[in-house]
Image (cartoon, rainbow, N blue to C red):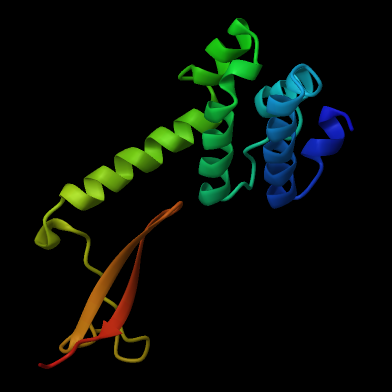
Length: 148
């Protein structure tokens, strides 16, 4: 396989391929190091992180960090650098997670839904909004409130 062939795969398959090759690299150093590095860092054409889910990106970044000693010192600097896309995604997810945990409940975003018929806010009495952090931002999901 070459880098173009790997990058042409679906996002989940790209992530699985990199994780598998990193495991093999730890067992047999030098066999896939340069190809994995090229797949992870190639900027022209289709990038590795395009369409990659946040969970997959974080798993691949963790695998890269675990196998860092398999790369050359120059490659290690790039993979640990601020310009590496997987690291940026990891740092953003970590920052968003700490902000979400630190924000008081009253300061968290609340949704006001509008009735498509009446064009006025719907009553949210008895509805608790659960905030979930997704890759695209906060996602609100109403849940029935318990009246204990």
